[in-house]
Image 1: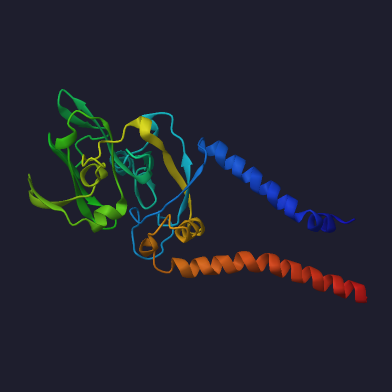
Image 2: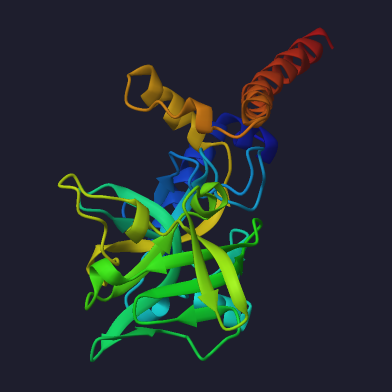
Length: 279
């Protein structure tokens, strides 16, 4: 039996073996199980249209475990060193909120306190950041070029990561006017710790490292929509309006490709058998 015939005979087993090897490799790299997370909302999107390179509804990302706080590069640190992921500076963090739901948002900065004074890790008097006892302002962020206002008043003394969905700043309708040394600027409330609340009405606190699941690495767009639409069929997901425009067209093309490849292979194999039998 030729090598080609052997490959054809055991093709399904070969594909299954490669899939298992790939899954084990991803799990080993991730350090988490499951090693992959599907994004269920638009809070990290940079556009209403499908866009590769950013995290969108239906994106599938690898969740890489981090062993120390310093393993996470925040926006402030990333902007200083020019380190970007998913279209902006710093790492995208996955963390568990008070209900155990995993949220995937960018780590903007790590906050600690020194005798009641906020300490922003990585802050070295950069021109684009202002730190006071009650707030932090980061200027000219992302595709919106908006300024972010983070109020610190309700979590004084609490340390942790301050996080934000990229899209939440783009879409924020909560402006704050602040007088700085160069005049008055308008900044917006968009950090999780200023706009998200627990069931008891208390706002989110900075993310403690013990609640960090990992950081996002890699991106397989669209594929997660299969899972989301399946959940939607059972009433377990309903964010259809947050799926980027044109995503469903690309998903249809991907689905057709997945179906047509094995079908074409089988048809080609049958034609070849008929041809050989005639000869």
